[in-house]
Length: 246
Image: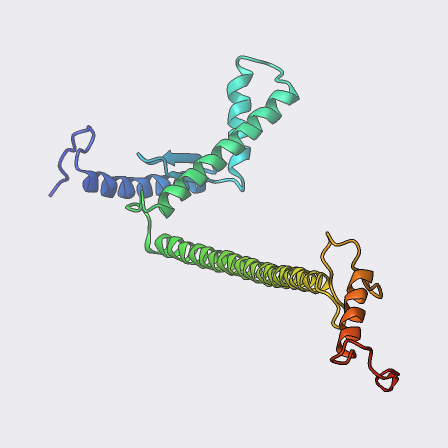
């Protein structure tokens, strides 16, 4: 039974479109390989999927040589002698462009996109790469947490030392205040005893200027003498005998 005619238009179903792309891509790469092998032709094939994934085939050892040959042949029709600077710039441009496209495609695969056309081997490689990246991330996270914990312990020790110093200063300040308070109390008691009279000495009023230590008032002595004389007189008013006198 013959094959049916396929209508050439975009396939709307996403899964069917990916399956058809994978089959026809492989067929196209096979045809390019057969062409280069059977006809000894230099073939370079570049295919980008709908999401930007790169597929390529080159019969030569390096794709850049074929592209450079194409560029030279294409630009020779417009420019007979291209400058060396332009050649180097274009070569770098192609190299960087290919590199950027490859990195973009790898990034989409790591994020879980454009996985339909990939084979089991390619999926295993992406899975291994993600596992290795995850291990590096976890190791780095553990190191960061350990560093933070070490810093926090150092800060805790510093705060404890500062707390001890402040406690010591506070105790010293309290002791100094107590010592000053006791010295003031001792000073007040000593000053109060200094105002008291010394035992055995007679304190005289300040207004009596005649009363001093060792001074006897003359009028007081006269009164004592008169009393003594009166006590030694006999009943007749005569003085007594001299036996009563020393």
